[in-house]
Every structure is written in structure tokens, then in C-alpha cells.
Image (cartoon, rainbow, N blue to C red; front, side):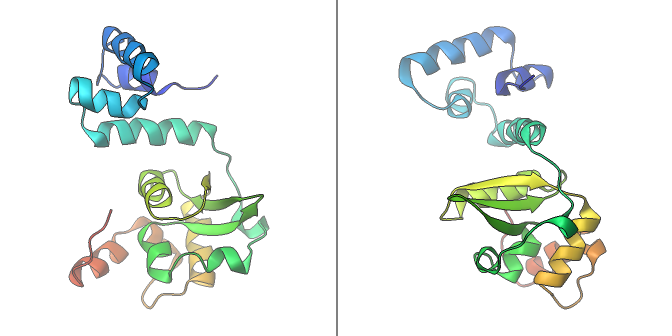
Length: 168
């Protein structure tokens, strides 16, 4: 059963069922995205909508073992080493015109934000374990001081913060 964004926002206590009805009615009338209407009509914080969106996305994504995945060099070229570690994602390959990228459940929000806001190609994300992602990042995007365990710590965030770079 597909999780609906409105259902997730009701379950998390962000919106009421009555508010969802109003949003859906307005969406049918205007064609605006559901999340944008949540913000405009009820001043819902974008972070709450993004969290529900990431939860919905995770329920639809498949899990992969990166040691068994085909990784195309041309996919790897689309992100820098810094981006791969900062957003905890690994470009895998193109399936038709969409770029498949892997991340973890824990980093899905950050990876989604990057994929939808920065990548110049359609992207879909698959999930993997932190261990699998860390090993793959070390192999394909070696970064001084980073180990496979660095995926779950804030070492990269601290490093980039010390250099004055903003994290999304």
C-alpha cells in the first residue's frame, strides 16, 4: 500500500484530516504541489514536509547491496568527491535517462535535497546500508581521513564546516 504524504503528515500530528481535505480541494482547483499548499495554507515548516516526503520515498525505494551493483564511470563523474561524502550518496548508473543513486535511510532527506536541487538529470534513489555506502565511497571517492564508518559520523560535516562551506 502506497503511503500518501497527507496521511504521513496526519500521523505525525502536523496536519488534521480536515486540513488535508482542504489542501486536496485546493490542489484540485489550482494544480499546486501538495507540499507547497501545506506551506501556503497552514504555514507548515518545509522541514516537516520534507521529512514526510523522505519517509514516503523510502517506502517506495528498493534496497541494494553496492558490492553487487554495476557502477558506471560516467555516473561517478557527475558528482565531486566532496558532494558524494557531504550528501552521503553514490551515483551508480543510468537506467534509460534516469540516474540511479544510492544513499542510506538516515541520509535520504539530505540526498533527496541534493538530487532534486542540484543534479541536472532525473534521479531516483535506492537505499543501502551505511557500511556498504561507506565502503563504496572510500573506493570510488577516496577522501583523506574518511573511512567506511565516516558515513555515520559527522566528520565530513565538521570538516566542511571548518572550511566555511554550507551543508544542506
